[in-house]
Length: 323
Image (cartoon, rainbow, N blue to C red; front, side, top):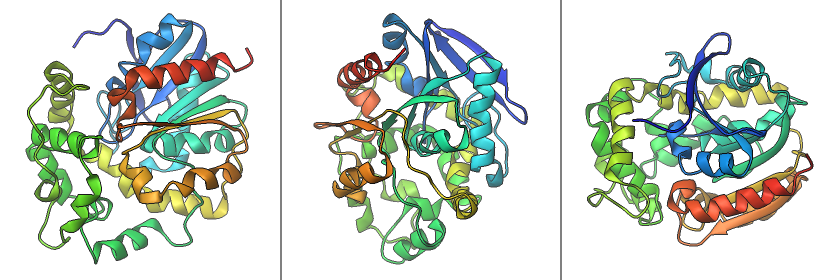
């Protein structure tokens, strides 16, 4: 699928990343989550470029045209932070604004500490800054899975989820996009038991496309990419949870002091799971927090579901940064 931007491959050391750029000016690096691609930022790239910014969207490691290492250990913080620093170095950028969604947000929260001097500000979507758990994440999710289906737990074993999702990529993508959107209550999935169920067994069947925020052509791009690559690379971000947790035992999180904006959908299941109190508590962990936006009616993919409102908030935040 054609796009009015510059597509190129960037060598970051032990991986090669697919990068899409548009515009010139202050760099804004856009980092997606699961199941995403650089294309998840298609409605932000031209808007940022038109406003005088250098918008840079990545296929994160494991996705799309970027390298897809097979080992979950290769998705820990040491590797994923090195990817982003490597992109800056390769593009001749000293300091950038970083925007993250989902797993991209979890990674970007750590950047000011792990890559000091390279982060001007943060634009974070969906995943608030949370304290590191006292126990390894997989132990917590395994306990939850004793009561109901938990996709994070199901994804941990290499093989079953890869095969299930890879066998029906179009069905999985449509159903998970719909389930996580503002049009469905994702936590209804928890009514299903873990035993005997795969993810497609518990996800709702999506209504036919197009939807107000996703056209048939847009969906076809995702389907073609994941049909080609499978989902193992994306699933490895889940399988790296304990690796990242272990890294943080010797390198505890520090307060995030760079200017930060947080934005989420009112119906985002992440917000429903952590509770609205988490946004208030985030202030203690993010002294640099300037703005919090909750978009009415939107779900997890807020930058697609409510692109105009997201773009307006992002541009207002960027305009307030010192140049």
